[in-house]
Image (cartoon, rainbow, N blue to C red; front, top):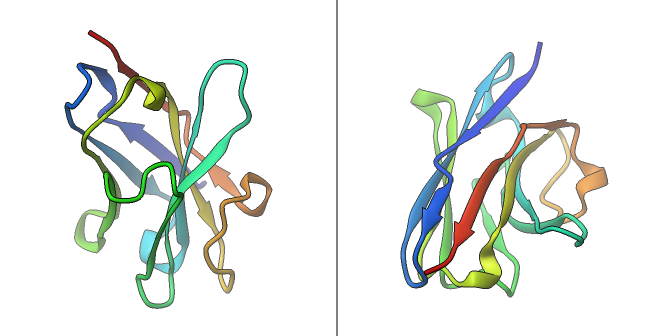
Amino acid sequence: QVQLVESGGGLVQPGGSLRLSCAASGLTLDDYTIGWFRQAPGREREGISCIRRSDGSRYYSESVKGRFTISRDNAKNTVYLQLNMLEPEDTAVYYCAARRPPYSCSFYPAHFDSWGQGTQVTVSL
């Protein structure tokens, strides 16, 4: 059974940092393309970052480029999302998702097959 579990969310002040983790069981993350998404209240789920299965290429939405970094630790079967220079507009529930091979990166939620339960990130004074 495939399971993804996000952790690392919390309350942080503007300009602060967090590191989110996406730990997997039932699959080897290195074999999948992994995306990070977020959803703020009243808004659609937004794709923000993706790491491609085949070569580890990384992609970012314009809203987070230069501030967030995606990485993968194969030994721990975990994908991370480092969030720096956080802004109040980054407040949302953050989700990781897996897309089975041979598919590549995408920012469309419907393209992904397995999802975690989400972790809340709140940026506020």
